[in-house]
Image (tube, rainbow, N blue to C red; front, side):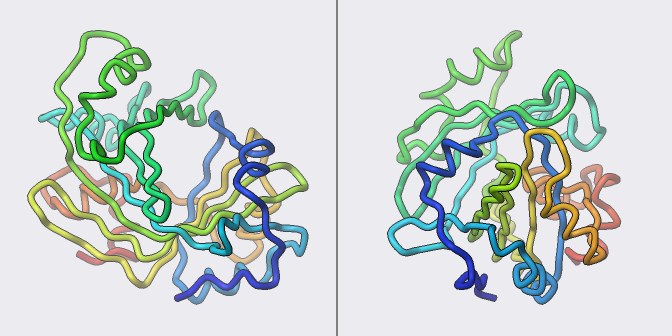
Length: 244
């Protein structure tokens, strides 16, 4: 599927960052069949704008997630514990820009993302930025190693009515540290990102019969690739959309 956005005006990266960077935010995620995602995009508010850089509107992402040998980050998510965290590098493959990112749970819920410009040559090595990770997470340092990588294509939408964002990811591929791979060509992962309240795009998704689901690109992917890991939060989703 190619995400069709020709009917929408563009927004530049600089303007999107200024108006809707949303490093502290509320995320809602939806998993849609590709045809349903196409229908959703055709129904977007005409005022919605789409991120465009050098004439392109869909961009390739690679993320590498880091975890402890006993998968503390994964298990905190699987068991829905407080003070969850994720550590990853994110590389924008079309520009070769790379960031080291630490995502944590906010004091009142929601997600806080801190990030550091990073050398793309170290996308699978956290050690050059270890000081940054330790500063955010606090406590005693622990061993981190690359555990899972993801590749996908993303289109980003900006809603001027409330300065919210929505992303649509397609072509998701998960690869674990042992080389096991799972491709998901038949689904789109839609994520709304707001400062607090429900966005117009959430209401549109609900009106189309879609409801938020629990999915983590890291934890859900690792559970899908390693059947022995706990998967209760995503079991229904895995059976419905992501057959193993």
